[in-house]
Length: 384
Image 1 (cartoon, rainbow, N blue to C red):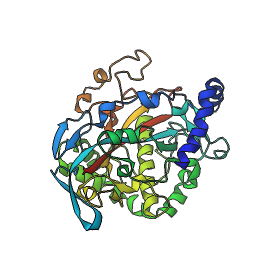
Image 2 (image 1 turned 60 degrees about the vertical axis):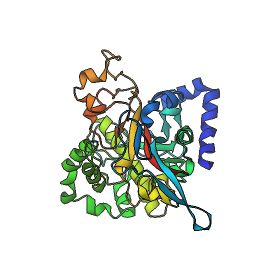
Image 3 (image 1 turned 180 degrees about the vertical axis):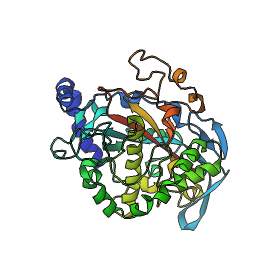
Image 4 (image 1 turned 30 degrees about the horizontal axis):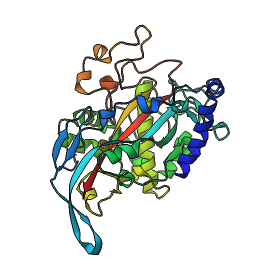
């Protein structure tokens, strides 16, 4: 709540004086979206499937339930005097966070291009879409800063299925920014703080890359593929290496690169929770039998499970609709230029999903070089 109020302190002046803020933000090189896009640039039915007592009451709209989602008919929660109270499990996707990946430190496109860090961002690295990953020079590519904040409607979505905010995972990261993380610009410092990186930046670890991409693309078909995808946590499917935990994405296309950075943000919060630096919702799991039995609440997740989350691009070109970012015909249906798009609906995609399945035409040079993603997580809970 403390961080959310701080965020409101920036939003309210913008709503009162949108023209002056927008003019200032454009001068700072921060792309502009409308704050209303937070509520319109995603598919509300991406919350499905809805599973109740092991039955798919409503089928999926885009990404199916994780391979280890609860499908049993009854659950038991601890009650007073150690009495077990029976209930039935429910599960669905709930939108929990917005992650903005930006060239300018503190830039927030979803808040109308408002710059949240003009002072803290002084001297911090800026990014772009080309160049080398390790260069620290201004306007060099292969790098993004980030903002992470709670999605305003997450508690409402949770309430729809009888869940509550506690079921989403408690956290101190209602608002987090790379402005607060000095290691986000510095691979050497990041690897010092997260020493396990040394084991996963080896040639042997890199061999898993094509396997993980293949597992991710098959995760909706076979549970064994989903488990394999989670097991290879050091690689984000078809997007690239998890480590180092920085904003670097090398020479990848901006859509794949910014997606990788957003996934790194989620994983970084998990890693910081693992080391006790923050109490993060990304440090807890909300999937599986362990969360619908006993205490009936999220349990610690030592390493982030990719299958527990999915993402929707909200800016610059939303997945919620047919339009793609082409200069010749902005209304062009993405499916007509992407012959394999029928494999996965464009409203959301799984973590690591190949850009060719959802991201073609979603790069907008010049006016859309900052990105925003809505993060969904699967939530199992026991309805008593």
